Length: 338
Image 1 (cartoon, rainbow, N blue to C red):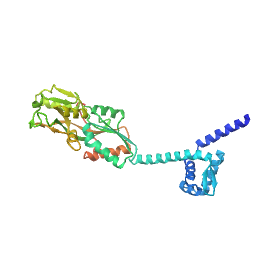
Image 2: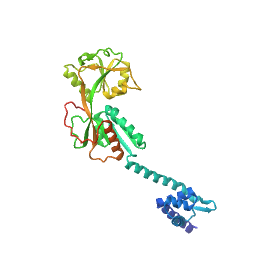
Image 3: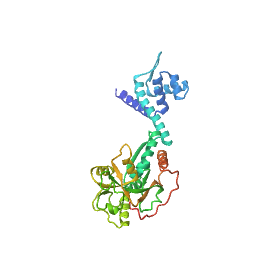
Image 4: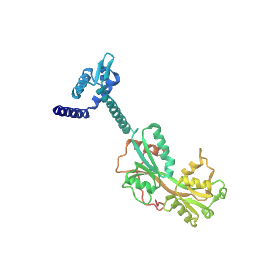
């Protein structure tokens, strides 16, 4: 008995090793025989002749030491041992086919994943519409979007978190590390609720508004810096009565519940003043425009972009009214602290 037990263990080990070494075509044949019940049809599915399929099945049964299929007048039916193999073979063949499909989709820009970032204006104006364009033709692509400040986006881009971003570059020269394309100029707008005391004041200067409650981003943000310059050029100090936040949701709540003056970009204003929101808000008519540093398309130079990311980038450029632009070098800007 001990000798027989040792022999059985050695035989089982050999079968286990053989099963781990099965080729995809062998797994596909097992799955096809179970699915069609006839060797000839299974051979056609696997792209081989019936004699070749018969030899392959016989070889597998010999190495395993068990019949995998029972030959009956109604066709081939899996034996108990064959049923075990059929169950796993079907799963493995399905996974192999899915791998092939996913890889082909990845190469064609129809699959894979993309991670991008954008400032709020860039997200509303170009990134979100481009993502929707992409998903309409390639729903299998996994897209992640972060909407954040330019400083956070630049840190993420340097760490390799993003395929590309729409962000402001600030005073630093990033031209060695990134391809930089100009995207869009922006202006700072002042928004209030319709019942605000200044809502119907006509054209106003910043000095006219200095004693009002304001909400704006914290010190160092590009929008805040643009407003600081505008107040300085009018010879007026920045208001003391202010609430600092960069959250669009918080700004919406403040506008709803108070006579606050909100500092927003054109894209945010368009979102809040257009259907389906149509918030009861108005823009103040300022005497002088308040320009803000434009945001740019930034792509890392040292990383290959996937087909899906390239496809999204092209759609973003289209939304911005751009073709393939030559990268530019951004030098220090006195209007940029980000």
